[in-house]
Image 1: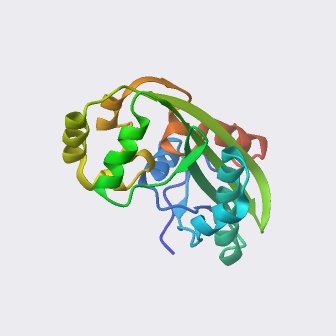
Image 2: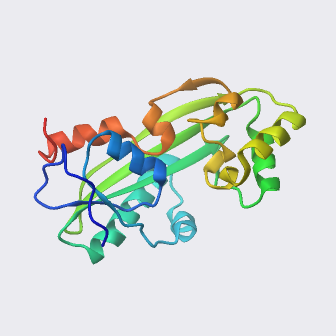
Length: 207
């Protein structure tokens, strides 16, 4: 297993594992000065989504929990943090686009409308969930021409296929929006303020 980042505010008696390969989530934890090691979970998210059938908020928590439990099963002596994010527009859940054509189609659907991003985390220790939260952001995309969408996708390239909604708001994606409501870390895929509050409550972080 890779060596954990240099310990800082983390004070758990066991190391923290992040059940995600997301570079953005890893950057958020590093910025918060939390020591962790990334161990991506191996779960079938689409199958779990089909079986769940609940609200987007409940689904985000369900997937975060499943990822944390999957990693915890192999690393029972660690704390495990699972995360997930759901994009919902008019009751429909969207996933990462598979092709640039899919990315363009998603942006055309989102243009001029407000969609929801629901981010969730689940913290597991020895196979038990000890903290779980979700948070929502609302993002309103401006109306865009087909020429702009094509130019935008040409500018960001394959990065459009790495994120739901075909945008990374921390970069060029800012060009797409009129208004944004919600915590920035929630938009990036991890409700960090709620996570830090939970860690302090559990005495797992210097308070």
